[in-house]
Length: 341
Ligand SMILES: Nc1ncnc2c1ncn2[C@@H]1O[C@H](COP(=O)(O)OP(=O)(O)O)[C@@H](O)[C@H]1O
Ligand SMILES: [Mg+2]
Image 1 (cartoon, helix red, strand yellow):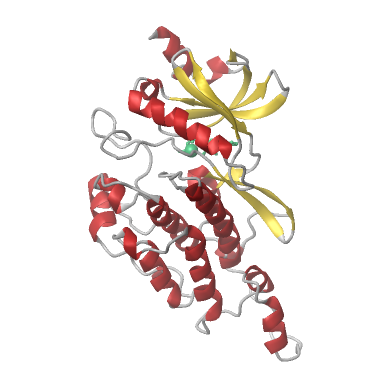
Image 2: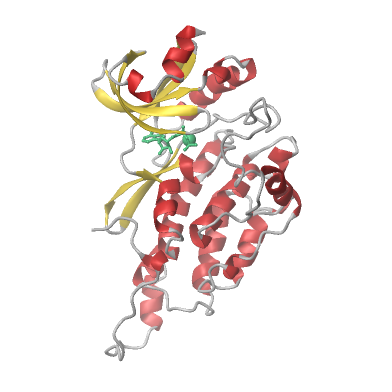
C-alpha cells in the first residue's frame, strides 16, 4: 500500500515537481472528498493540464473502476463547448487519474461563496450553458449524477455579451447509488448531499432526470444564495429530498416573478416523470417565468433582456426615453458582476 499512499495521501507539497504518468505536477488546485486536482505539465505535448488523482480506495472498488473506464471514455468522446475535454484517463501505481483541460478561472462553488445570490441575467447565461452540456451528455447516454457547483467551472468569456464561459466536469465519477459509495466506513458522507435526487437516495435506477433535479437545485442556489433544502444533519437532508416540498424561491428572492416557483417545483418534483424533459426545457421555462411576468420588483435590465432575447421587442414596446428623475440606486449585492473589470 506504500505505493498508492505516497501518490495520494501524502502532504500536497510532496507531489509538487514530481512526475506522474507523464505529467509533471506544478501545484494543487483543489480537493474534494474523493480526489485531488493538480495543475500539471503534460511532458509529451508540453501543455498545461488539470490532473485529477482519485482516492486509492476507488481504484480498489471493481465496480467503480469499470464505470470509471467506461464513463471517462464516453465523456472523452463528447466534443462539446461546455464540457471539459478529457485528454486521458488511466491508472498509475494503484491510483486512477484523469487528465483534462486546465480551466483557468473559478468554480461556481467559490463564485457563490464569494458573491452570494447572482443576478438573474448571469444565472440564465450560466444555466443555459450547463443545460446544453447536460442535454448533450444525455443524448450520448451518459448521466452525470453529481451536478453541483464544484463541478461547474467558470472561465472568462469572450466579450461583454458572453462574460463567462462555463464548463461541466466530472462525468461518471460518482457511484450509481449512495449506498455503494460516498459514505465512509463510519457512515459519514463525503461530499455534498445538497443536490442529490430522491431516486438516487432510494437506490432506484437513475436516468437523465436525476440530473434535471440536481441541476434545478444548483440553479435554485444561484438565485437564492442557498440550496433548496437546509437541514442540520445528513439524514434530515436525505429525508427532505425525498419527502419535503422545497420552499418557494420567491421567499428568498422577492424580486423574481411568482411563476418561477412553479418552474422549480417541477424541476424538483419527487417523481422524475413530473420534471421537465430536459435541462434546456427547464431553463426555457425559467427564462419565460423570469422575464414574462409583470410582477418583477424592478424593470429588467438591458442585460436581462438581451439574455432573454427580448431586447428588440421590449425596445419597440417601450415609450421614448425620458431623463431619469432620480439618481440611480446602488445595485443590490446580487447584482455585482461576476468578473470585475
Ligand atoms: N479541469 C479543471 N481545471 C481547473 N480546475 C479544476 C478542474 N477540475 C477541477 N478543478 C478544481 O479542482 C477542485 C477540486 O475538484 P474535485 O476533486 O472534483 O472536487 P469537487 O468537485 O468536490 O469540488 C474543483 O473545485 C475545481 O475548482
Ligand atoms: Mg469535481
